[in-house]
Length: 600
Image (cartoon, rainbow, N blue to C red; front, side, top):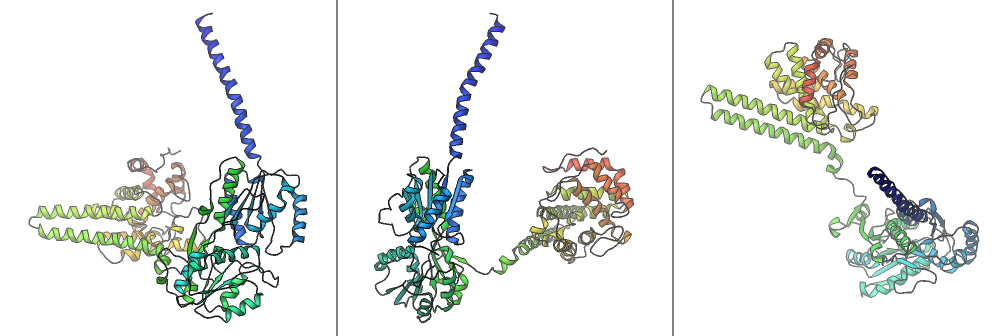
């Protein structure tokens, strides 16, 4: 066998071995992936889909399942036990679940809240066999064993102690604490939890449990109370008379008649006229429950997530606190207020912040110029020194004005090279039409301020990637008048030139521009030149609302608009000197400027 044949044989053998080793691994990986994708999970919710606590838990759980890309295997059912919770109903529900899911082999079940857990403890084995069942948001099992058939439970552990301690501190004259509760299984468990911590709260306060009253009796009891009393509302959906209530109705009704603030410990009870407290989030329990269930299904050890899921925030309704005369200073520093009206700064930050920046920049300019003038007076001994100082002042003005233009352009995500290019284009055009050196210097220094008025335009409008609405476009057009107002405080040649440019650079040769509708030579020559330079550079460069145009398309547009948008003489001069224009573009390309495409 030749060396060439031996090498070819070795190469083919190596490839074959790699294929033989790779195929089984690929099949195994695919099989494992398919195994994960084939998981079937049932979420059984104790309450209805219109109950925000259940909705929050559902969203939290689905956020985990969606991330694992198995959302198409999730089945969801609602017991709606807040509306109906009898043995007869449970039997009907069992028949429905048998009919609906009898042919499905579930890998695990997530139960939200107590009623779903108890129902599954009683019927899950007959329905689904022996599978992992994880319950989340469970009350009343802090020191008790879980019901039979429940693999794991994440306990709710409402922050009764923290909320009631804050209530006692705020209501320092209180002698009575009324626990407002309904007759559901959940409320019974919560009352038991509160009874276990009574002695930790205060020996001076008597606790009263109003859980055996009709809705009307409860309203009357609270309305006749004292402003010094403490009212703590548990989730309330069914009164002693058997009447069911939509979420929030009882809280709103009690808040209207209560002589004292009502404290709560669940976030779904907020924005109902209640004051607040250390509240729990259903979303957290949904996330923790789904995560733990997947661990159970995949044979991983499940850690105790009870405390992790019991993350609570101290939240107070600002409007309710004010209604009861409670000052914000009465609350701890870690309080989170809702319904707090925005401050003046919050309301106007989009205008105030840019305004503050422009004032700071202008002040800096004035301070620097003042220092330069003072320096000029000190060293004004010889004409040569004076000349050097004047040149230094002019250079400083040029740099400061350019810097100011760059800052303004950066608000619309433009680089500083944009204003440098516009300044150089403008000077070149001015040279070709015969402007004096003094006018050329003024034009070059003033043109970077053409968009100074944009400092007063909100970012949302300035950087909108979509076509502006008529209202937003009207707001955007105001930047020309704003620019004039900013620069009208001085008649020095530089600022006067900048003022003409800022105010008139959106006027059109045919009179259809804004803000004054000037036409032809009514428009200042500086503004006409800057307009042409600015439009050319804007079309040639990428913006938030468009891609960069090729040079051929840009030049065709300039020729088309000659005599309409632009001064026709300036367009002619501009195109005749396009090679020098390209040189300026290359010199000031920057890191975001697109490559120059050849015309034609």
